[in-house]
Length: 171
Image (cartoon, rainbow, N blue to C red; front, side, top):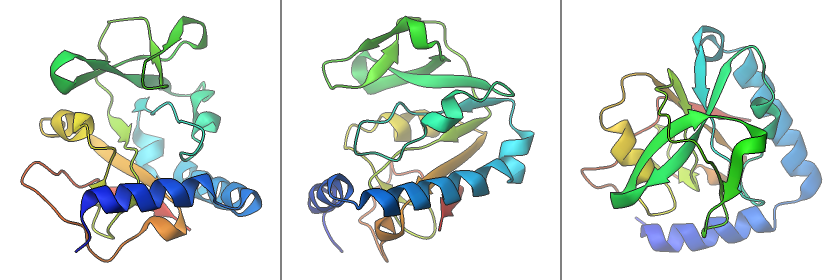
């Protein structure tokens, strides 16, 4: 099994050099697949991460007026909450991620979980902060990830804190 640090480095490079037209094709196909899924149809409040330039582009979902959209906000001690998405109430964190100025926590019923690599059974390599795994430890709703074809790996090193996502959307 590859160590997570090696996977992070390899996947960040692969994402940053991913062919633009292939990225667009896969992104559209995956989001189209998600929008017709039962978990999307049944969700009322969807948590969506704010993507960095090289991450999966979920911005199409941020404008979904049929659902309540919430975004992550990091707190001290590597904790995280979700707050209502309001384009006019965002600030840029020192990590280069846009977050809400609000501290009003909202519990979603579906979380789109970011990451860098996944196994077919939903285990993932994230960015190493553990924010999502900590949140997901007590979360009872649905979870999903959007995964480009090269991000699926046969195995990933796991620890007792790793929480798999329940649904993988891929091409």
